[in-house]
Length: 287
Length: 287
Image (cartoon, rainbow over the protein chains, first blue to last red):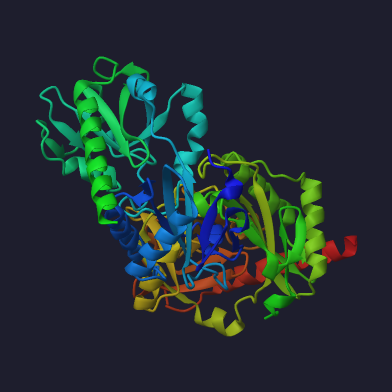
């Protein structure tokens, strides 16, 4: 891990050492939990799938009636300036937009833009080989397609996860599965069709990239998935920017399929890593 | 209004000028909208119904697994110290507890306690005489009895309020009425029974005080209220710490009852003001 003392942050137009990155308490994120964000990974100094992430970030901001204070070009330029302050092999950049310094603590003001860069590690081969255990919980996020900062439910469930020895919690509504607090969900059916829920989910970039994969023998599609489908699935996995494709081997204490990471899941992880490597190569060549 | 430059805030153990009251961007309110708060009024230097507010604050914190860093006595002492820094005839104190400076941006850390004091004005006699217009919106807060900082829906609806020329939005679920974003709701039936919804609402202190009123000729009770009940009501009003009892005269463009503030509503406002004055007198005598 990088020493936090060596990190920088972008706060309201300025890049400052992370330990001096503050917001006034009148900020509407602090007062009313009002804000949106996005998060993308940076490999060898190159932000991956940046346009997709910034498209989603701008759409989230618009849904919350927040004006991004920078044009797309200026935003990208600020991101690149932040990235060049660090020398991190693999990291994530969080771009956060809050409701601003509200005079009455309720009405949005000029939005505050904050960007943070932190190192992270992809799951190790051992973690991928082991897969994760999940529990289910009846809940739908308030505005699923919008990446708001409201993670109250996910954070409150950390204790329940620990009590069950589980790694993550899969949300469902009356049995209809949606997503994890910070990841999307896929199952592999016995005919090798790969399915991810279409309704009430955040359109994760990794999810979109899997749905757009060409060159795999599998049909990858959006369709309703219920808890019984998961129990009867051949394989299951989650997707996210930091976790890529991570096998899910147990639901509410019962094994999914063989209870081990499946061949289709691992093939899709390989395909995703190849896609990322191709993008990285293209970005490095453009420099 | 007081000049913000003359105000102070309590931030993580210290009282500082408001313009120097900041939280680090790693705070879980900023990162994940994770926090709870309470808000009470201060008249002539005396916090009203403080024990009820702090009981609820501590209960909210417990529901979110946040530890209040001060004992009740120390918390009251800090509140009184903040109040003595100001000389405001009528003001509100917001006590806010966030998920703390999280190292991973997700897991709660040592909770951060912030307290802000700001002047406010009760509704004027003219505002009371006019009453307010409201619209309805299908929504239930995620954890209604917990005073979390999540006001995403209420804030997003500000624009819709303006478009309708309305003053506030009444939440309901499938027609079953609950509350406003920041106030409780009551109707007066034609037999002068006064009813407030019991399910999926925050237990407002003003609401509790009305339910506990003695010496009025009206039966004041909790019971389910649906939108049709509101349309057929004789009177309606909202309650909150800053608004006290405020007549609601129009729902979704149609008048409620006579379309004017009703006699029962105004009698309850008088009774509430008397209750507050009695408490203030008791508090001043105890000094």
